[in-house]
Length: 74
Image 1 (tube, helix red, strand yellow):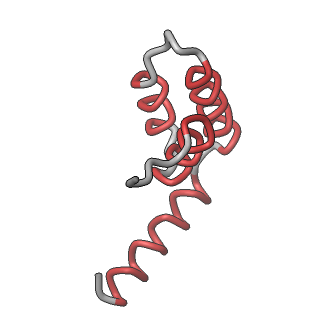
Image 2 (cartoon, one colour):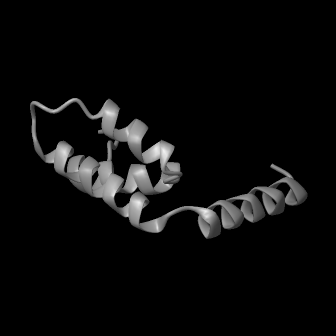
Image 3 (cartoon, one colour):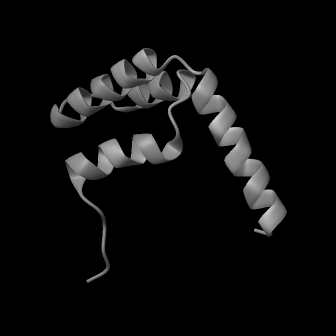
């Protein structure tokens, strides 16, 4: 990715984060974390909820990484 594209993307992310309802994002991420701890839960609806509240891919991934760890090649 070139520098200008990277800067545009960072500005867009900053704008979205400043305009989203942070309480709703936090609640959606909390629901995802709770669902990830329950082996019988379907995570997809919780991921969609977090996405609809404008949680970033990184924030969603952090929740899943904290619960399941990170895959590494052996």
